[in-house]
Length: 412
Image (cartoon, rainbow, N blue to C red; front, side, top):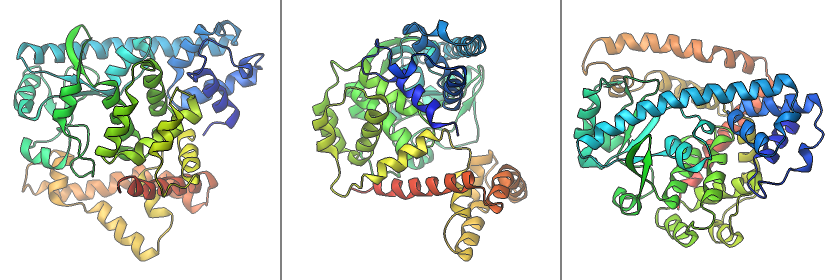
C-alpha cells in the first residue's frame, strides 16, 4: 500500500472536475512527492493515464528525469501491448463479422477505444465480447477455426445455467477471450435481460471492425457490477476511474432518468449508489446530487463508504478472499470446515477448473496437486498472519467486511 499523500496527488491529477485546471496540490512538488505520485500510479495500474494527464496539464516537464522516464516508458509499453491486443481483437471481430454474428465489445476494449482519449491509456487483461445466446455455437466455431481453445471442456447449455460467459478461450494473441451471453451471473439476483442490452446497443467501430457497444447507461451498470459484486471492490482505483471517465465522457447525454429506472428494475440500486458515491468522492465526475439522493438505500450506513474507500485506495488486493475468510474471524472449527470445502471442491467443479475429462481418475490426483498449489500460493500471507502483521490483518478485515457488504448489495 502506498502513502496517503501519493494517492491524493494521483486523485487530484486524474479528477474530472475542471480537467484543464492545474490543482494547487500539484504545484511545486518535491522530488519525494514525485516518487510518491509514481508509486501510487504503479500500485493502481494508472501510469499511462497519469503520464497523459501530466502532459495535458503541462506538468510532465516538471517531473524529475527518472520519473518522467518511467512514465514515458510505461506509456510506450502499454501502447505496444494494446497494439498487439487490438490486432488480436480485430481478427476475432472480423471472424464474427464474416459469419454474420453481431457482437458487442465490452469493458476494456470499449473504454480504451471510445471513452479514454487514447487507446494506450487503458490496460486490459482479457478480451470481453458479448453475443446473443443463440449465436454462442457459431461464435465458438469461428474462434476454434482461428486456433482458440477453451480452458476446459464444456457444454454450452450447462455453462449458461451457471455462468454469464463461456470458459476463457486461449489462442493466437496475448490475451484470452471471454465470450459472454449476458453481463450478470445467473446466480445473482439482478434480472438483466440481454435482449434489453441489444435493444439499446449502439453501432461503433473498434479495432477497425464494425461492432456494437453497450449504451453508456448499460456500460455504467456493467462497470458497477464488475467492480462491486463480481470483484468486491478489490481491483484498486482503475474501475472507479473507468466509471468516472465514462460519466465525464457522456456528461451531456447520459440519461440519468433511465439509469435510475434500471437501477430499481434490475435490483442494482445499492451497487450503483456505492459505486457512484465513491466515484464522486474520489474523482468528482458530474453526477447529479438528486440521483444519489434517489438511489440511497434506507438502511445505508455512511461508514460503509469509508470501508470501501479504504479497501479501494489500498490497491489491488494481493490477499485471496479465501485466505482472508480463513484467517480472520470465526471459530477454529468453522475455519477447519471452510478450509476443507476450499480444498475439496466438488468433482464437477474440478472438471471445469482443471480441464479434466468427466469421471477421470485424474480428478482425485488433482486434489493432491490442488493442496500443494494452494499452500504454496498462500503460505507467505499465512506466515504474516501468524506474525500478526498489522497490514495483513487489516487487509483480511477489510476483505471480510466487503464480503459481508456484498451480501447486503445483493438484497432488495
